[in-house]
Image (cartoon, one colour):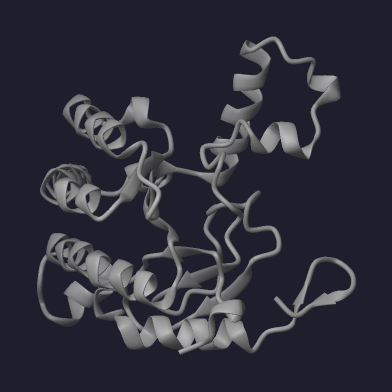
Length: 236
């Protein structure tokens, strides 16, 4: 495992491959999503054990509404069940849950469950879990600008710090590492502001098969990088 000074503070994960995992086994796509949900807890525990305490998981994008209606409905039910099942234990371990995205477009009952989870865990500081649900990076920037305009901010004076303070992730450090499973070589509208200088790690492993060894490989890859922020190399 990489040593602490070489660890990312914040990892974003594009959890891809649930459908392919199910298809390879002759199962419905919903079973792939269910298997993917079950992967989250062990990956969180492996990250915490390694010393990484900020995670952002890409669960459902603004584009995913175009999937078949039955699949979307099953996903929403799965998200609701999972939050209800996991929130008490996450709270007991000091994890703060934040759902980032356009929550007002989620089913009403899921909105209620999300609000309760966020309120229960809002003061926790041992770990930070952002769940990107109905999330899109472009939508996030648009929503941030609209929020500033509603607040009466003179948009001619907006700088990076002001805009960052209006993003869904305000208060979280920018991700140092973005992990994408299932081998796709694109970022898919995920944290496009925050991940401007993040390192990318792509693995062929499908998300339901992703585990501690895969996370360890991603951390080792990150530790071997020489980071550059548009100029002088930075060893972090």
